[in-house]
Amino acid sequence: MNENEVKVFCPATVANISCGFDVLGVALDAVGDEMTVRKVTEKGIKITKLSGQDLPKETLNNVAGVAGNAFLLAADYEGGFEIEINKKIKPGSGIGSSAASSAGAVWAMNHLLDYPFNNTDLVKFAMEGERLASDVAHADNVAPALFGGFTLVRSYSPLDIITIPAPSELFITIIHPQIEIKTSDSRKILKTTISMETGIKQWGNVGGLIAGLFKEDYALIGRSLEDHIVEPIRSILIPGFDEVKKTALSAGALGSGISGSGPSIFAFSKGKETAIKVGNAMKLVYDKIGIAYEIHVSKINTDGVRPL
Amino acid sequence: MNENEVKVFCPATVANISCGFDVLGVALDAVGDEMTVRKVTEKGIKITKLSGQDLPKETLNNVAGVAGNAFLLAADYEGGFEIEINKKIKPGSGIGSSAASSAGAVWAMNHLLDYPFNNTDLVKFAMEGERLASDVAHADNVAPALFGGFTLVRSYSPLDIITIPAPSELFITIIHPQIEIKTSDSRKILKTTISMETGIKQWGNVGGLIAGLFKEDYALIGRSLEDHIVEPIRSILIPGFDEVKKTALSAGALGSGISGSGPSIFAFSKGKETAIKVGNAMKLVYDKIGIAYEIHVSKINTDGVRPL
Image (cartoon, rainbow over the protein chains, first blue to last red):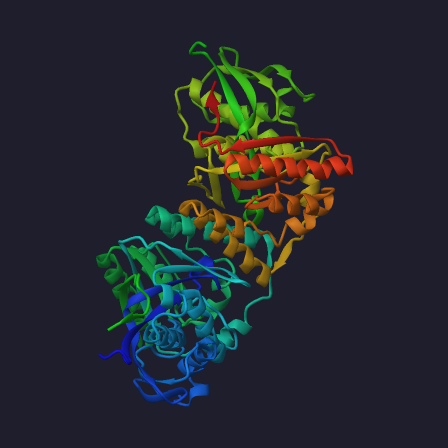
């Protein structure tokens, strides 16, 4: 590696963690894209290579390109960047595929220009990539991808990202049934109002989950992984969801829910052994239904995007 | 004091802390009732003395009596209790007047019977007093009164109370304009639905506030003290609210909002000096309007009810 080029790992992320719809996300360690970014004298962003997935390479149609353009617009820099993407996270999987590319691109550019921007600035640039991917510039995947660990988007206006500590024995199991749900579609089916009663339950659980993460109280984390608002609606789009969740809990998971806008389903466990056991139990459900799947067991990635 | 009698301090509390409507409360140190509870062989609860306020002494019409009855019903104890109440917290002030009496009574009884119940049990008994006072058995005042510090009612069913640490330099200023708002009335004007967008802001702020308390991040605590749901509606019932809040923030408060269901207004500050300055600024607003008030500046009471 020379100083004009950096290769980075761009982590997958779980957003919309149960009660934390639109605000809480976490970065994974076991799955992510690889990206090489190179400083060039020619202005603009050019995606020179894209492997792993069939995605557009044109700058304005690629989330890394769009995020990179937002970065360039704000940077005091006359040149441009070339990007090579080895896309390992499947688009539409619900584990932050677009966010990984957006976050990775701007992190690498910031690194190559010797850190003119802070992480919150980078989140803003990466959010432009998210806008391309899902029509909404949400931050709950790009924030954990950039900061690492758990992040809370306390406010969008102004953007206020809070880092939350990750208990050391917390592991995440993800099962990705091989069906695609577009984020934009899964947003459309959500209701625009909620009852006050349900709202109170939701912010009680958000408070409990944040407290559980700080206290390393695994049981409290589990009890707080409740979602009375989004999960009952979105889970309809995911075949076998109720069964997978029930099975995960029976196998020892602390809690389980929809990853992002689905179709991936996540489960939190205390300890790697339990997380693997939970994954094996989840698999059996899709084996029975006859839907292909990918499975990941990951500790929490506390670094976010990092050089390889 | 002998083993058949205990005198206790029953703290005032601030519930509905901005974004934490119905879930977040905190106990005060500078203001509270005093109560003496005595074991007697005669069954039942008897309120033998009630000074300070004009309130009913009949057991079934007094929150301490009702909470005490709930305690007795669950306790393995053949006798009864006599209660003397020196009521220093004005009813209808919005700083947990009824909760102090309910919590104090059951805490003292539990103490005299050598702690057969845990704090969560006591919260359940004290909630029966709250039901008498406001038609709703809420827990967000009795929980901090019993546990001390900040408490989160994560869930009502099952009841799940989470203690949250209190930053050491956090002080609370309370101004109580001398008008009465009944909790039951101030609940009636609330809407029964909220928009998803507002809900997301609310649980983002709850997450931020809990994180701020754990991190002792006073600026984050301040930024999170936002309420887009209840405050805009209830504040209409409190003359001068907007002006008092604005003035408190200008004087250096971290944040400010309605205490409980009002009319008291609270402000959080870093350091006692600022809290006093904030109080003086708040006073001026009511001096100008011509409404009498009481003011309290308090550190956080981390003990809850305690023997005197």
